Length: 576
Ligand code: PEP
Ligand code: MG
Image 1 (spheres, protein in one colour):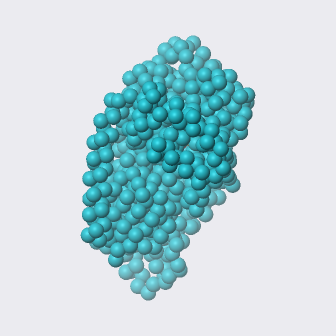
Image 2 (spheres, protein in one colour; image 1 turned 90 degrees about the vertical axis):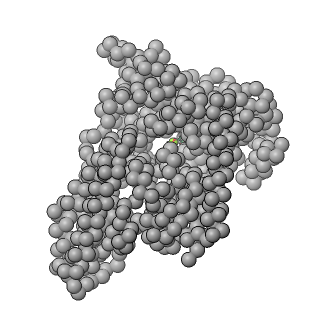
Image 3 (spheres, helix red, strand yellow; image 1 turned 30 degrees about the horizontal axis):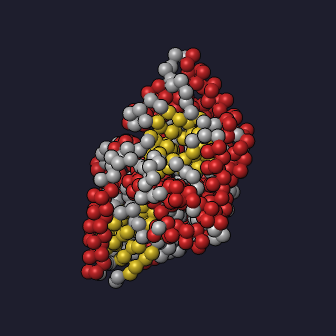
């Protein structure tokens, strides 16, 4: 039956395909008893065999750059699937407790989770995610019809939520799109989905109740609309959308070699936020000024899927950073130091997993400064990469002058050490900090003299200024940069940087949305850092903007007292 579900578009792309429903990690299965033990055992083992075959098929399909990393994941899951304790425990529950296979899975999961949760080691505790994924797969297999047992390539995954590392796996598996009941368009998973060009709809709250395995879905990753069992009219709409998107792409492609210049002749610097080799290649091809934000945490997430102590060492990091630098052929690459913590904590085992308030916890530079060895290793790798082309170092989650000075001192020492060890490194490695904690924005005059450049992380700045969790779907409507406090703070930071001639960019998602271009230009911004996926659209918006006019209208923007007034201002620019 045709139904429409509406979520939030988190990564663009229109897709038509069949649903594959994955139940939430924690199984909501009621206690259930069975009479026929042998039948239940054979049901369970058939499901386990299916999952084994599915994993083998996935493994065989992997290719390209992600094959190695994602392969490790699958190998770990395959090992768990053969774990005698896990299997024996399930059999015992069915045989002795006469539980249904579903309930046995749940009991076994909770039992293992209990053991993991009591461990002191944060890394081992985080391994419960793998158990959950394996048990979740078996549970899904118990309920799938024969025709659906081909794995997930070419299907649309419907689930409760997705961890950033899972996005990589899904893309490598050939999943067409992802729909989550929870999640937010600003989460790191969403950022990664955009980077992987994997259409994503988040916050489709009814998705798990209303979508069944095998349903045909028409997904629009822009509007967030999901049509279940689309009608002839929906199919036509889908086809038209694909056609419009193709036309739009052709038009935008004509801007590939054009400058990002306003109507009145000011060149705006467009940097790229690049995480993968593909991003770097795309950034280069689209004429990005350089990489304005390379989030190194994704390297750490990838490096630690299977083993403890598998954090990327200096050489491994150095090679990754060097390759980005080489990929940009002489254009500057801004490498951000590690920002694990909050929702990026899942796989590394570095962040504390039991923090009551992880977004306010040991994340970003706080974690780096607390783990001096780890930080020094990373800085050494970054500085070594500067021997291959221009590199800037960017530090996340700065909230005080003390942190700025501590990192700057360490960076200088690292450069000195490397030189004396005979490494060829750049004469100068500009040092910058993220302005994403309101305290840093307000205290900026106190440390601006100690940095070479600044980058405003609006994703976190909005979160911390408005006290609205960027990942909380229930607050998605409230989470917006269109708030007078955000605009005023942005303007004061941009102005403080301008007064000292300190280069400043915005690298949060806001910079990648063409709608916000007039607003950011009016506030005085001349550098944007954004994912290459929307670089041409932002370039187009810049090319149709009159900078002098916008700056004249800035006072009216800053007088806006609420969101409606800001939206009105934006709407007026669109028609001006
Ligand atoms: C930001 O906060 O705007 C930002 C770019 O950093 P991240 O999204 O990685 O937290
Ligand atoms: Mg941030």
